[in-house]
Image 1 (cartoon, rainbow, N blue to C red):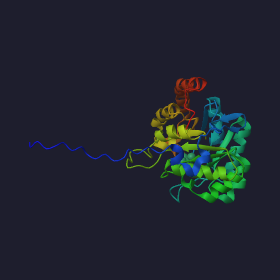
Image 2 (cartoon, rainbow, N blue to C red):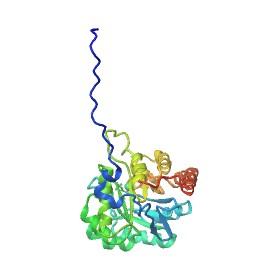
Image 3 (cartoon, helix red, strand yellow):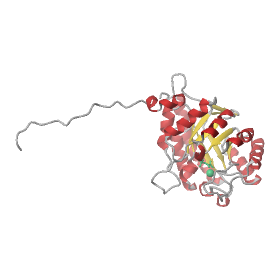
Image 4 (cartoon, rainbow, N blue to C red):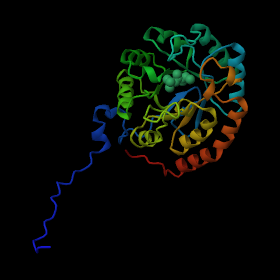
Length: 304
Ligand code: PEP
Ligand code: MN
């Protein structure tokens, strides 16, 4: 080799990584700040985002009085604090069961009265907000509605806490924008929900974005709930994903449970039966205990 001088490759100026505050500057109110480290959403005597780990459980759809009441009693006795169940159902097929509407809300009210469980249920249309808000302790904004801004505004203005599910094709930034809209409409009580997103891998119903849970807990003061049911679509995988959700730092879970999943009118494939729910809840205990220790020792991160 001829003895030429060695030329160093040119290295561009080192780029400084923007802070999370800069990355999400448009939605600064949902980010942790000196004055806002953690939002605690109070529902009945529950503190969502506080020390309690919250389990929301129940069927995908409210079907019959027997189905809902038996599920409500069962999940309450085995550790759930909040009953889920859809009265207004956003179905991918126009021919699938669309929910009982008002009759479903009335069944939820009966279950609430009998068990003392709080109720979370979806509202799909801004016209239905006053009605659903009359029956629900928490209004669920579903994945398909996350970017329906007029619905978000109406739901926010009802004053009810909002469970905001991440759109199946929404980025974390998109989710934070929708949360910011709720805050801008005078409602600070937003609970974020990771329920899986669509990716190239269609093996499971969705891809559980566990990094989003870690990120959201790192940068946002809003409570974060994990939905292992919609995240995978298969009941045998739900307990494993639920444990992962707890370890990732989620403040709670929303899980589908049905007395006879094989007969469910929607999402039976991913619904746990009662025995599976009990087993999952028991298996979560050591992880929930670790979470409590971490909170007590304040080792969970508190700065954005
Ligand atoms: C549901 O909770 O049953 C539901 C329809 O969820 P998602 O909006 O996440 O699909
Ligand atoms: Mn469902």
